[in-house]
Length: 296
Image 1 (spheres, rainbow, N blue to C red):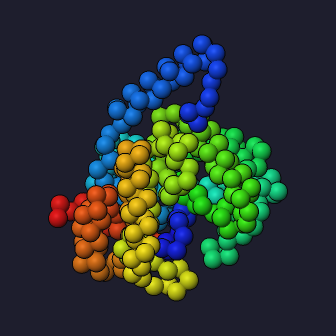
Image 2 (image 1 turned 120 degrees about the vertical axis):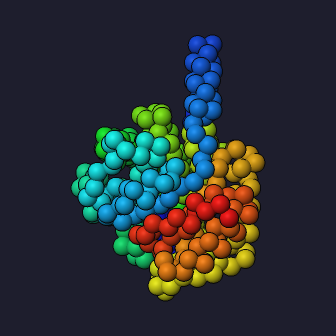
């Protein structure tokens, strides 16, 4: 997850069908998806923890929890049945530490994000959506995760310098999300931003998140920062569009120093005041903060 207010994180269903049978099948699928959406629990609260040693007794106080799956731990199997465990997944970037890195064709890598030491993936590469579903997501499902937090959805903007390349990568991202949905239709998908993708895939998304509404973390400066009003206004406009046009819950992830309890409680209150679901943590999401569970 990109813990900086200057970028998004580290963070199909409506295809045209022709012919009576195809239309009937689409209608049946639509009804099934609507029924699934109604049966999904309403999102009340969520935590994000990217450390290697999760304290499950604390995390289970949350309804949803996003974990960094590379940690050496196993998900609870006979406890915390009310908690939904989601895996953090970087879509637009990769590092050599990922298990699937060596299996990726090298021509899928089209650049580097020097700030985070990661490589940028061409989302329009043929074969990438299937590879992502089968080599990235399937092992996480086998490990017990039942949903995913898709990050780095806007990383293509670091190398896409023309409209043709931008559109190609946006179409690739849409194909990735559709492929995951095809393989794992019951998985809950939360996007980190990805606003420009929602017109095509909103019915396959459970929620939308973004970072740094009031308080952010600057990786380059190594410090917590106040978010400029213009950035906040832009994010709130996007949140209103997501809620109004697609009926999706919106999550705001902000950052405060772990020892600054007052900052966390103030930010949670302000985020709630804007009608959003809050979570506050340290700049690298390595501590568990329960402020978002407060009733204030």
